[in-house]
Image (tube, rainbow, N blue to C red; front, side, top):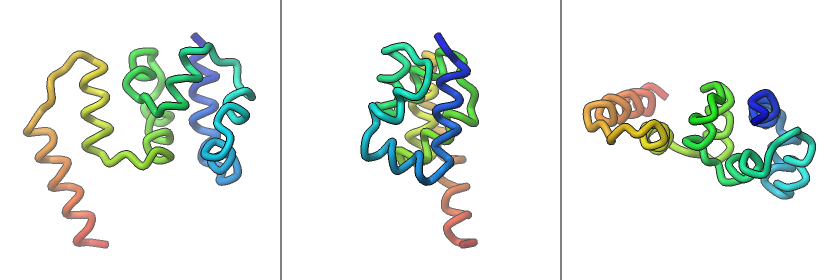
Length: 106
C-alpha cells in the first residue's frame, strides 16, 4: 500500500488540469503515481470508504469527494459503512441542517 501515492494523487486533483485529465483519461492520470491495482481502482471509482480503511487522510478523501461531486450525506454514509458503523439518523439530520443553513446564507 502506498498511502503517500494515494494522497498525492487525490491532492493533485486540486489542480484544474489534473482534474480534467482524471475525468477524461483516468488511467493516464493514475499511471503517474506509485499505486497498487486496488488503490488505482478505488480512486477511479471514488471509493472513499475503501481508501479510509487504508488510512488515507480525510483531506485527500475530501478532494476525491469533490471531484465525484458527492454530497456530504453520501460521503459520511460511505465512510461509516467502511468502518462497519450503521447509518446514524441523528448525524444525517445535523448534516442536512448544516447544508440547509449554507444554502440560505448563500
